[in-house]
Figure 1 (tube, rainbow, N blue to C red):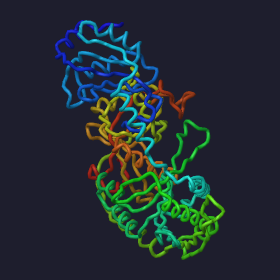
Figure 2: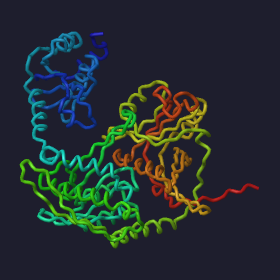
Figure 3: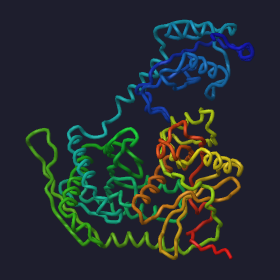
Length: 533
């Protein structure tokens, strides 16, 4: 179909005709992808309409490269009827495009709207826009100096293989003294023993480390307060990115480096002076953990101090050597641990009596905490047989943390019906619990329906490393999505797709927020026996 419906054409004819010229085009995103919110795929294409008289973008869409030419028309109609603020609705007197196919297609579609469609091999406004983005990309600094890039990535890989987080908790701070460097002392904090995020923080001052620790352990902190505390840190960092497990048979790890400072925020590159310090510190850390492994497995870790001579990468035969001294800090570790234990003890004394039900999730269901790509979310929303409860997810994250519940088709449909009959899903909630008989401390995963009923869907023991890490990873993912998460109910628990449901098996998607029990006025939940006589 190459013409507009009569009703649409009539509606557009009522919009004022302005004596302006618009440029329109469709071209690959390329480097522009990194400057657009929520866009990660440079292979996608950009459809853009620009008002030449004002030099303003009236409408823009990012589409898959195999999307039909009709998408160009959809973006154009939006530019006419509901352009980006502050532009007002109007029809252009003339449109200029650089694609003959688009020109001829629009001539057929826009009949009766008094719009001339012309061809030009150059579109000055749009060309300058894309050239500007290309120039910005050219100006971006390299994440690491070329002289150090191979060496520092190599030591990061050695640290990953050595896994210091198996030995050191985040309270086991190491002090590193460096000679002939801009900074004489840094403090190492290892991440990974109690979380699923692995990495190394190199604090430039002890005060910054202690201040962040105090802020992070404080009670009733909002997400904004935690973010403020995070950005107030004064440190360099090494983190590891993990490729999605479903795409690779083996896990692929990529190290990345950066800096945090109250005045700079987060920066994802290091200059040569910084890289020199970070490299020498990480190399010292690797040697220290490799050669003192047995001593670091002790609890508590005793005072240990070792000195090393670190050879820096060099472009000539003149090699630079930095002398370092790395030491454990038992007294500081005790102080940091007491901070956490004090907060925990105060919280453990809270008890509430809130009835929580356990009859929602069908017996034999598989429950897992995962993260799904946004593309799958969009696919499910367009799949007719999948029931969707959508939320206005404002996050720009590429993935959505999701609870997967897989059961049989009849049980899945019954579960979906119960949630719908309760008014829908209101929230996902996690809250600590305590079994006074066994002494076990765990986290209860609960679903809250719109009628304010709470239903347990899983228990995560804090004493089981895999479960504790899974839950920690969930919370980290939810921070990236501003608390938004999903619940997917799937069938196929007794078939060949057990544990690995396909898109066709997913019968419902609920988008909600993940909250803490404190948001509902909970404290530590006590497991109490229920005797029926």
